Length: 310
Ligand SMILES: Cc1cc2nc3c(=O)[nH]c(=O)nc-3n(C[C@H](O)[C@H](O)[C@H](O)COP(=O)(O)OP(=O)(O)OC[C@H]3O[C@@H](n4cnc5c(N)ncnc54)[C@H](O)[C@@H]3O)c2cc1C
Image 1 (cartoon, rainbow, N blue to C red):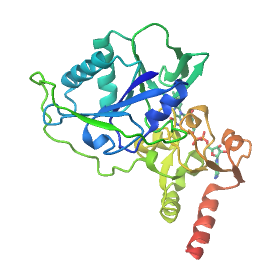
Image 2 (image 1 turned 45 degrees about the horizontal axis):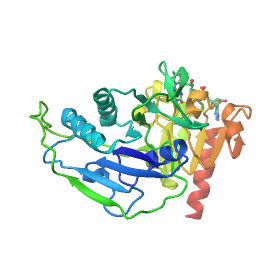
Image 3 (image 1 turned 180 degrees about the vertical axis):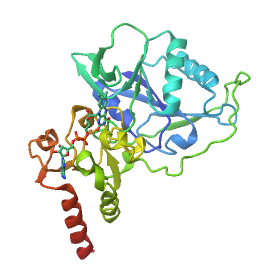
Image 4 (image 1 turned 45 degrees about the vertical axis):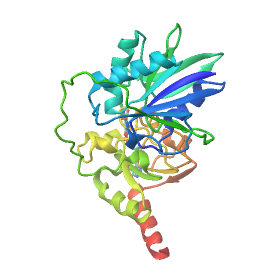
């Protein structure tokens, strides 16, 4: 049986790191989650055990004490694999834990394969210009940070989870004081949306039309890098290798060519509708439905139709 430790730093219902485990382990697993209460499930869950960090003793971003605590937990339990999400904190914490345990770390994994018992981790390298395929050899726990939202477990099986609070740890005097947490005005995340209305170079001048369709479909707007680089929208809503990886049920790609870097950001999307004046654009070969024509015309016609129905 493989023993896995997962650091939780996203919403409790985000099981993407459990999905990653399914891809790299083909035997029984014992899953332990470690994290603050707000990031961990509160009852029975997919985890065998949940270890809650005492936020009165160690505050978020106190990476020195967090690192010491995780190292201590590992030394007591000897995990085979330790996973962190590639969140802001996960990216700072994972390398510190790797150094403390004297093991390597593969950061920002976006795909995983198990080849005859050897785990192959795939991650963008050299600013996303190539994809590195890395095999795990050697001893010690295998450590990686994984992009949240990329993987989903096939089947969610609830276990009777043993939830424990980690009170025993005596933190060292911290050199960090958290003064304030300020959230950006909009905290909506395109990774949470079931429907994405995504625009590219083909709708650059009419990007505002996407918002109306998104409101009608209870969806969010996202964009290709072409639109982001033009300064029209924030990088927060960019889909792709240097943006976010999304897994909506429906992805409507309006005037998006479907470059390799853009497609890299689409994982487990159920249905893609591509609207493009060029039916040979790469995105069309991936799409469930291709509409050959002007994207703005499509948005306006579809919006009018929906308004008539609703
Ligand atoms: C290191 C690196 C990282 C990158 N990371 C990303 C990333 O994360 N995300 C990303 O998106 N890109 C990324 N890129 C950029 C990527 O290579 C492409 O340049 C970009 O995706 C192109 O965006 P686009 O398809 O929207 O625009 P374009 O290439 O301009 O394509 C426009 C499309 O719209 C169609 N069109 C034109 N007019 C209309 C119309 N009126 N109606 C309908 N269709 C129309 C055209 O036929 C075409 O297919 C990256 C590049 C590099 C080098």
